[in-house]
Length: 160
Image (tube, rainbow, N blue to C red; front, side, top):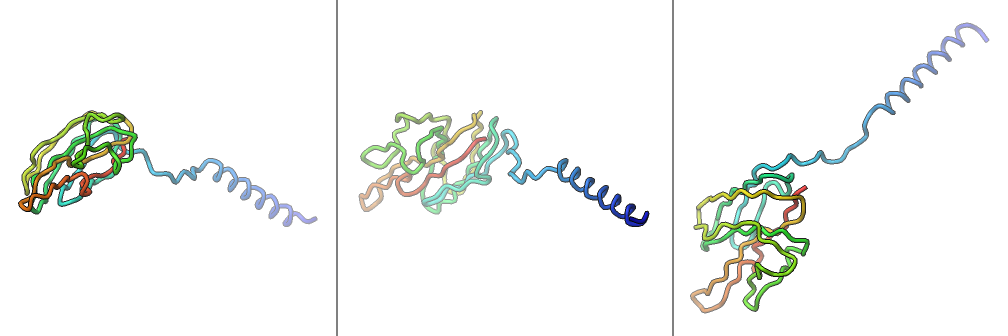
């Protein structure tokens, strides 16, 4: 074998070894980076939905800036720590969540947020699952009872 072939083979071997070393040292972790600890969450309440941006946050001091977009009803905002499905919280015969129900802990709330208003609440949240709800019940002019939670004013929220 000539010197030229040996040099080329040695260069190919060195290049291959360098490639293996670079691959071994690189990270192929494509998972989402952990959420930052605490922070601010924008909440929008409207007939009949609760929207959050972002949909999860890191544990710590969390401020919820809650805006009622109505268009007609006063709403409230309740933070509940629970492992229960947020769509199936224990409710009374009127469709309102029993806030002292088993498997739930009410962390904090804002009552009576007028249409067009924004109010804030800050809570120290541990990692886990939460339900964010409006738990108002009201009688409509036609005497029908309207339970906001039962109408869909609820969402799940994760703290990591």
